[in-house]
Structures are given as C-alpha cells and as structure tokens.
Image: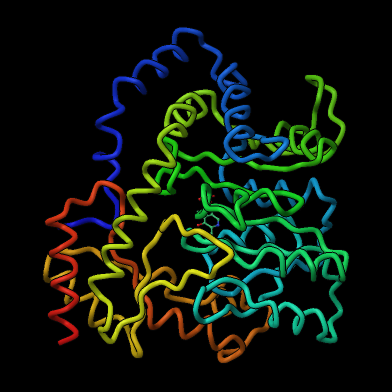
Length: 370
Ligand SMILES: *Cc1c(COP(=O)(O)O)cnc(C)c1O
C-alpha cells in the first residue's frame, strides 16, 4: 500500500540528529520551558519573518489562545469557512465564541470574500468580532482581501496556518499577515513534532505577551495569576525535535511541489481537475487535491484496489456536523462547501514518494478515467 503519508521515511535520514537533541533534553531534565522552547521560537521568527513566535500545545489551542489574547469574548461571532478541518471552528466554539460559517471559493477551496460580506450583512443578533481564514491544503487564502474587509468591519484576524506553514503570499510567509497566525505542528503537518505541538506568530509585542500569559495558567510570575489562563505550553522535547526538523522544511516542501508538478503534467487533458493555484500564493501541498464532476468515492475505491491510499478531506461540511447542529444551518446553505465534500480526494504527495510510486498513482488514475 502507498500510504497517504509516510513519516518513517521522513525521519530515517535525520534520526541521529534527533536522537542527539532528545538525549540532551533528558540529560538536562528541563521538560517544561527548557531553553529549547526559546531557541525554537527564535528560529520560527527567523524563518517566518514575524516579529514574535509563541510555542503552544497544539494547533487548536493556537487558534483558541489567539482569539482569547485578542480579546474575543464568549458569545461573540467569529467567521470561518464551512469547509475546513473541524478544529478551525472547534477552537472558536471551545472558548465560548460562536462560529459563523462562510462558503468557499470553488477553485481554491479557501474562504469566499463575497461570502464574508454576505455573512456580515445578514441581520444577526451576534456581534461578529473576528475572522479565521484557513490556508487550506497548503496554499494561502486571499489574505489581502480578508484584511481589507477586516479593516472595514473592525475584525481581528487569526490565520489558520495549520496546513500552510512555509507557503508564501505575495512573497511573505503565511501566518504573518493577521493579528495572529496559528500553526499546528501535529505529526502529519508539513512541519510535525513527535506528538501534539503548535505555535502562534504575531507582530505585536503586546499580543505576544498576552499569549505567553494565557498559555501558562494566566501567570507571568509563578503563583501570581493575572487572568484565567490555560495549560497550553509546548513541551521542551517537542521544541527540540521541531528545531531540528524546521531546517528541512523548505526541502521537504520543494519535493512535495515537484511531486505535484509531476501529477499536474501527467493528468493534464484528462477529465479530472488538478489543484488551482491563484497568482498571489505558493502552494506547499500539505494535500494534493483532485476533483471530479461527480462523487469521488469510486475513484477512491479503485485506488485502494490498486494499493493506493487516498482520502476525502473533509467528507462533511462543518455547518452540517452534528456538533454544530444548534447553530441552525440547513443543508444547501453553503453549496460550494457541500460539493467539495463530495467531489474531491487527496492522493499521496509526501516528499519521499518514489518515481515508481508516482507512476503507479498516475497510471491507476488514468485507468479509472479511460
Ligand atoms: C490540523 C489542523 C488544525 C488543528 O491542529 P491540531 O494541532 O491538530 O490541534 C486546525 N486547523 C486546520 C486547518 C488543521 O489542518
């Protein structure tokens, strides 16, 4: 089976380097807030160009802490796309705010600017105070467009950069445009830890300070608690591993891009849609998404029979998830999101795919289509 992702292959060539830093953390014994946290945060700043980086427990908490630190209150509305991973909206709901869903652009799968305006103009009892655009699959949402609307309506912006850390929007790194950029460093993300991890980028010193207080039980000085905070720290061990892996991120992303380029070329002219990349963004192919005119299920089954793992990210639009039932959205409310759930599939694109594997994937898709 060609899996959707093979982390063992990624880790093998850098194993000695990682074993070394793990040993160092164990020898030092500073498992919470060891020096590796600050070192990794400094590397994130250098890499991203953001002024500040704050390591946290995971990507979901990165979004939640960002909203809290930016002053979003329970009961206030936060816009986010209906078509994304659950956590984009789950993070909003988990701090008591209310997700306000918006449809996506059919070609890029990112939040629709028209949809945002529509949601804001709707007569609504909610005070909408923020927006969480999602850089889905590894390419950026139209962040200039989002920022323009945010300015007009005085909204805070938290970029969900879980899938796109390393992608550029008009030459600057994803996650550095909004008030905060939330990163997930979950093992399966392009930059992944050996367990849960996350980080937040910001250009505001005040926000960075608030984030550091909220991630650590609401205190700046131990046992003196200023606000109701959380235990959302990044582990020293994960920071040490991530600091090693960050050096390789651009190389891995480049290989994903080469794999994607190969698929694009080989599938050209066939009745299947390859990823559309708007001129303003690069794509780091966290996922390589194909789209059919009808359900993708038969192709997924065909690929499985050929020993290829492919998946639907995501099969149910968030406005139709049981957990958000009380928000009152109906089927048909966001047609593009609902259509994307049916018609898309992700095929393996990870950096260590071999030429034979890529050829097998392409010929299996061709066989299905012809
Ligand atoms: C992975 C992911 C998250 C959540 O990150 P965790 O580290 O798993 O909590 C949020 N949003 C998107 C779009 C993601 O892909």
